[in-house]
Image 1 (cartoon, rainbow, N blue to C red):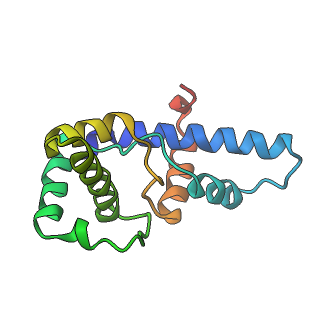
Image 2 (cartoon, one colour; image 1 turned 90 degrees about the horizontal axis):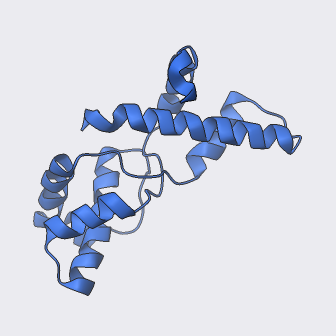
Length: 139
């Protein structure tokens, strides 16, 4: 699971810089909290989770009926909610195309954007301050 954390962090910081630049260009007041709020309100490029981890987690959630009982309300900051979102997308693909969970999961992980960054604002703030000190974030 942690193998994609570094990439997610770099992508988050790139989104942070894009949003900050946009706020400057629009003449808006720029604060760390405002930029984080804007970035967190949008979607993320992907799920940043390995197939192996997602297969185990989504399979377990499907087996226990969690995906079917999903009520549409996700907190958008927990791993469990991320797995529910992935599972819902997998279930739709499985029902519409008849593919297996494994194939549906590959499709979702490779082609779908995540509806959020699935991290708390507190974590995002810590990430900003930690990575802001690192000069290698401009890649």
